[in-house]
Image (cartoon, rainbow, N blue to C red; front, side, top):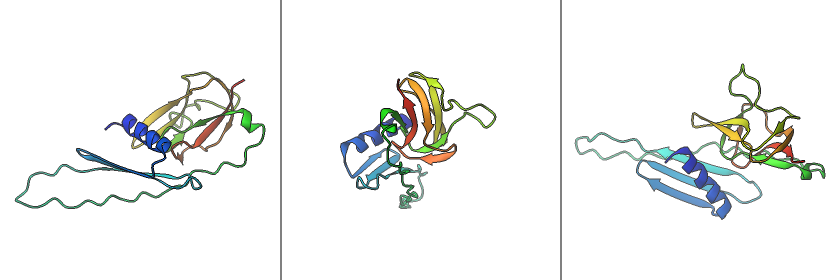
Length: 164
């Protein structure tokens, strides 16, 4: 199962309203648990079961699923009437948010920059893969809602964009 398929599965479970989904395929075991709407935290466990070499009749050891530290989604302060006019760009995956491709490079976007659909806004690193997050809207960057090099959750607000 590749990263895109896992991301799509997480999105599907989040939209479906299911509280827990378990999926086992070949050497991958995925458990997605969601909690009540008030805490808005999603926990995803992904475990790759190692392929064992045949041994002299020994049974395979039971590998427990590690419990990941749950980081609650950042609580967004009460929206002002001004913020309600903006489009919120949200994280499509869980990972670490980066504003630039490397420390010596300029940020992809700054407050006040005009963006269009398809422009790279940031990078989210998940499972040692660096995923470029492209804009799905056109407009002007108004505010960053996440600091550079911080963990983000699925569907966590990242930017505010003025579509006008």
